[in-house]
Amino acid sequence: MVIKNNVLNILNGQCMYGHFNKTGIIARNGLQNYIAFNEAMCAGDAAEEIFSDEFIKKRCLTHKDTYENYKKAVPVDSLSYLLRGGFDEVVLWFDEDMFCQINVLTILAYLEQGDYWGKIKYNLVDRQFEIIEDIPITLGGYYDIWHEVLIGKIFPKTLRQTKIIPAIIKRGIELYIELQKEDNEIIQYIKTHTEENDMRLAGELMKNFSRYGLGDIQYLELIKKVKGA
Image (cartoon, rainbow, N blue to C red; front, side):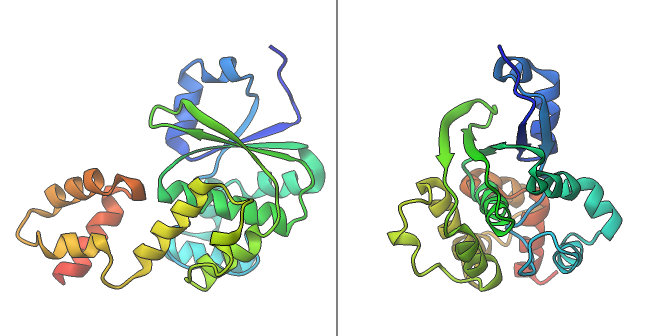
């Protein structure tokens, strides 16, 4: 197998990064340059220029973290190097839930914002990080859609008519917009199970709403908000 040194693999997060390091996935797929995205763009606010100082400061408020820690966790410098021509191909490794799709949309919008010229491929993976489908990506319209969704918190007017955007990303956007509603389906479920223990309820939410890809911490925050604790 020929390893391509000019390809940057962007993995969903640290869990996938650790798994790739411990298993034979790297050898089987010829990976060499790979980084963990380590963001959760489905929560909080963002600034219009992705990964600008203003953007990072807003994300730090969301994550309740420092500027320095954010830049250590999220590979901002590697992504900046990518836009400067450091790699001529990008491969995204993300699964199908809403959490991942909003991250994918953010990366694609960032590449488009920075006039990235290289090849882009999206490896859609399952929960065991095995490839379900590889999707070629052509930039065009991603930043505008990202802006409407992440900045405006509205469903993009042209999304349903856009054939370029993969269906899996469209579904992620639909779930994200649902999550923005004051009385969304998750909140409704919590309201009908307020007598349950918080940790048990969080576990049920993770199981019943796995399509959102949220974790126990995010669900516990929602439970606290609904119960008024």
